[in-house]
Amino acid sequence: MNILLTGGAGYIGSLACVRLIEAGERPVIYDNLSNSSAAVVDRIAALTGVRPELVEGDIRDRARLDELLKRSPFDAAIHFAGSKAVGESTRDPLLYYDNNVHGSRVLLSALHDAGVRSIVFSSSATVYGDPDTVPLDEQAPTRPANTYGRTKLVIENMLRDLAVAAPDWSVTLLRYFNPVGAHPSGQLGEDPQGPPNNLVPYIAQVAVGRRPHLTVFGDDYATPDGTGVRDYIHVMDLVDGHIAALRRRHGQPGVRTYNLGTGRGHSVMEVLQAFERAAGRSIAHVVAPRRPGDVARYWADPALAARDLDWRAVRSLDDMCRDAWRWQKDNPDGYAAAPDRIRTA
Ligand code: NAD
Ligand code: WQD
Picture (cartoon, rainbow, N blue to C red):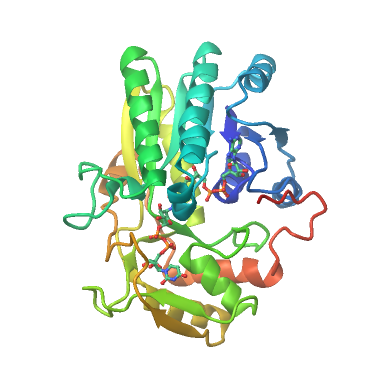
């Protein structure tokens, strides 16, 4: 299949690109490089022996999308492109409604008019907000607690409405839990700009000496060790979930929503200790008050994806930390050494 990967130069998209090539598909990356580097294409080529086409463009640029869709017939799109920082979304909500909601609207119109009727969308467990009970299945109430999460829910609903109006659309909404880790080669991974917002990249930068210590946000939650509990999922398991979704859902009309998680939670301290094992060194931490907006704990019920997509996460927390560490130690400054690094403000 010819597959359009919006945001395909990013952390998850670049790894999905590798897996798609390995599965015999033909991905084309469409990315404005606002949070990524064109250097990933070299790395993908080195890993797979195939250089995917990278089209530099914005999902809000209808003319550019039309140009691409006119010259390349696509069977499906995987829509990764968007902004994803919770704190930034609170400070600059209009940016998030523009890039995520408006961007997705423009993309969907262009796909629809070009006759593409199959999409896999990167949603997030953040759409659930603070859960009443865990594990979370797909029927749990959606009440996102921040702007970023609300934009994801608006896009989900836009896709649901589209599929009602145009019943030949095949829409798969994948709600990711906490993706971490890297390609096992250490060649592709997460490259946050500025101080990482997320736990594992932060720990990795402390382990490699870029930052003095991890700040643990709260040790007084109602969890076994008092620190927050999340469902961390190896990013390679996550991208395998996309391949499974494409295989099972392509050509099947209607909307399906799936959690992509492992079904088990780990605390901040468990992750820290696993990373210490992976890196073979101790990692300094200090305990600070809770981060505003954080919830105590959540993890997925991934049974529906297992049943419908025949997909399960198989990699352990130790695998996640081992691969995150290999990426960090081999690329201490991420893709920064690449001459074409695009820096965002
Ligand atoms: P990322 O920032 O590494 O990748 C997103 C890519 O989209 C980047 O390459 C960026 O340059 C590109 N992009 C952004 N706006 C664009 C636009 N207007 N036009 C074209 N390209 C644009 O993020 P990621 O971690 O790979 O996340 C991918 C998707 O998964 C996002 O939609 C994100 O919201 C979602 N998601 C991520 C996580 C996570 O923890 N990483 C969890 C749940 C959901
Ligand atoms: C995990 C745990 C923190 C950093 C976010 C988004 C969510 C999704 C995934 C995109 C929490 C603790 C963290 C640190 C810490 N992204 N922590 N010190 O908040 O579960 O989810 O990323 O869709 O939408 O909200 O992930 O990695 O930030 O935090 O103690 O320096 O680690 O308090 O318990 P989170 P996270």
